[in-house]
Length: 158
Image (cartoon, rainbow, N blue to C red; front, side, top):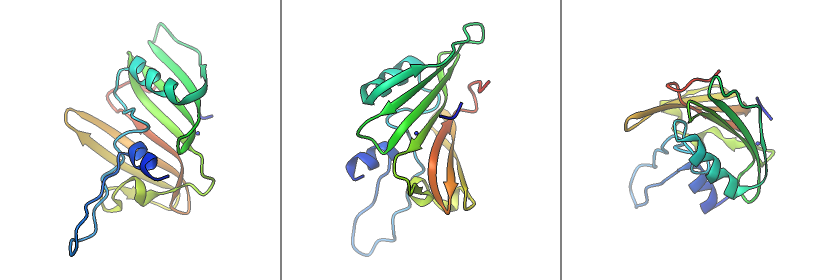
């Protein structure tokens, strides 16, 4: 289902930087979360986090037999206009965010291009954080993301 700048941007992207004269430019870490949500998080906690940022949410069809949930959030005050959250087995299997800025977000703001696979329309990074592994996909054009997705390979994406 596809249907979504300052300190807030840095928090939203989980970015950091190194300061200091004479140091090599900082290598940006790959995006670590979308608005505080990471693929693999408990679904209900992620949903609560996004509800606090939303002006409207819409539940998709739930498949209780398969244990799947989908919720779309229309957001306010974030770099994203909409987020779609998919859960399976009570975990976030993927989260996709649609960028508010029509120009998109430069791929290099989302992660180190040397550590990802980058084309003009797609950037991907494989992330291993502690015991959790997930994938970051940035889709757009001209090296700028219009949609950013975090997905957990260990949770079903049915």
